[in-house]
Length: 359
Image (cartoon, rainbow, N blue to C red; front, side, top):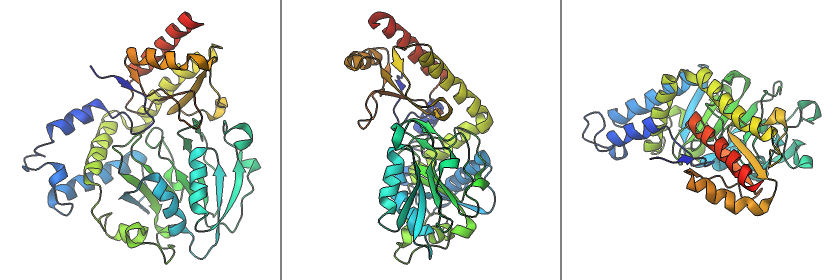
């Protein structure tokens, strides 16, 4: 029996995907090879990569004037690649600080340019998204960067910023494919795959065509978006198995009815948890209601002395990885696309049982 894995990442994958990958492990479609053994330039893997990109485009309705890149290095590497690829002749960029991942992005960008922190949620311990009316944007910025879902703090943008002619760049690592989005509102969307897409090691970038050729001269070829786009993300050997698993996840999502369907399921799962937290004083949900994440749900017990007993009890009930990030403490339930409704129902049941026995 599989447990319910609430890890923030690497995270739970759809069971049908894991089963199919298992069945195809030794011999992919009669090729006699595992995907991990294939040449990335062979016809077998090229077909896998092309279908993965086509399905990704279909799911997000990505316009034709955007390139899809499958890269490596994770979102943290992308934090450096963003200024490398987008500064052009400009010397500054705007960043919105909504938590730990925004802070990492800001720190990396400062190695390459002047960073204007146009708004910050630090004044309230990163429990909300600053309204755009409070942003102090620089009209001459190369781009505006946001992290649209803070995995650690559980804060999510439920609206799209308007940055005018300045490209909007979004780290969507932890909620990509969980909801419908209008890709055309963004210049660049990027993230790590290990939340809602596939295994760790794969990074995606969706880049508008007019932004492909702004890279600084110091940008290494393997990190240069224009060069990678010209080579179909295969300037170097790509993370082939990660792309294969991502492709299976994309197929699974399409079989579920696409993002409109999965978004409704995610809203239902999140509501189950938040409704219970709002009805009790035993647990505390720290994020402003309008800015709560559907994917990452942080919470605290009213008495931190009960934390260890809570985690031990959850494990005994088949629920793992509920401990909050070390930077904020408490608990966190990550309920990505692959977390079934039954997992959230089981968690709410345990929350109630623990409150009854320790309240």
